[in-house]
Image 1 (tube, helix red, strand yellow):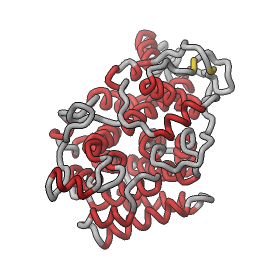
Image 2 (cartoon, one colour):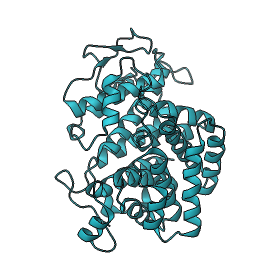
Image 3 (cartoon, helix red, strand yellow):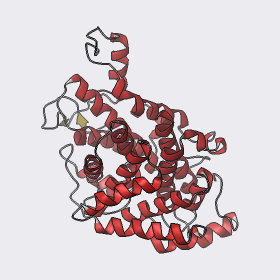
Length: 378
């Protein structure tokens, strides 16, 4: 289980970093610059090799918000998972604007969190200065979070950009770890994507990826997991658009597995949610190994870092951290932070941070204090 969690988050970051230098290039420009095979190793982006973008940043804050929600539940604090993850996204917003987080943990609002003031405990993740950089953040995410007046409030826009699906893999990891029903996972993935993306497909595609990752974490292969995703989408009132995109990706994977350039041209280049998911699924289904999969996912004229990230999430969850080449891992920005967060995400359901453990014995108070400081449950 640990390997799948670490593989999913590191794999997503690797795909993100591989795609970052070519995100805004046409395919012809990629080939002209890197040769016929396209980009196959990290190239400089944002002043370094292995730089992550907003995709990985927001994925990490999604994971942190989910852990904080788990801590909140154990300690009996008021709030909702949507509120805790929204507060995490507000902390991410502060890394992009330089302003302090706008929401504080004083338990006075309906979500257990109140707007205004700077009393919120930033926690461990926010303390990492390397996260405090703008890496091509999506305008939809920025504007939706700026407009949020109540934590957990769905976005009032009609966007179905890929900014919701690109960050949602941690939901699948947690829900799979807890053995939640696919419908529950779909609902949570949708709700968290809807914090910034108001179009039904923008949320449903995210829910679909969460279900896919959750099913993989529980031991299903990609085909079995996709069958469950299909069932969930068929039950969604607005699920047809995402279902059609996935079916298109699966047909191309079956009939043209060795022609990713043509496949992605027909599936879509990933700027919108269902296309980004479909590209990730096509590349995961046809990948010979992790390296091959993420290379396929970034060599096109669209949103290369997002499609690379989604593909990396899927393959990392499927094959584990051991499948990721060290040549990708060694230069990866924030590799140790990503690994530690993934390990905490896998382990937190087993933390005993209440006053008594399951046997009724006093817990290690020093350890409890460390965990509460790292992930305040508010």
